[in-house]
Length: 90
Image 1 (cartoon, rainbow, N blue to C red):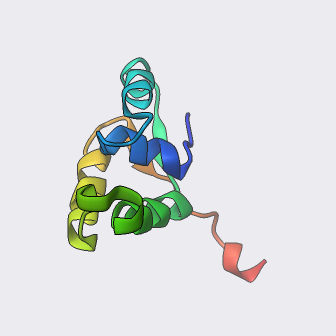
Image 2 (cartoon, one colour):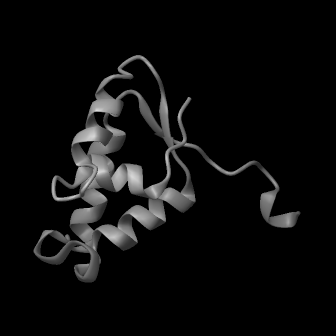
Image 3 (cartoon, rainbow, N blue to C red):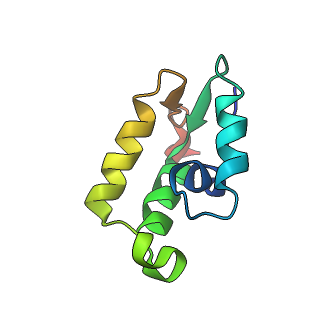
């Protein structure tokens, strides 16, 4: 299983990202391997993907960011990994 960082998910999603081609090649080259978001990468993806300072005119609204995130999760290889039970109490 791969647990990529925020920049990987941004690069795969946004064609204007400097590493889009390489990230997409890596993602597509691991067609049988599972990929995972965690709450941290999910929130970072939404925050940075909607940031005009980072993506300029290619930045998306938060609503559109959720749509992009949901589209990624529709890929059968991708899922959200939940935090372990009791994490907040630790």
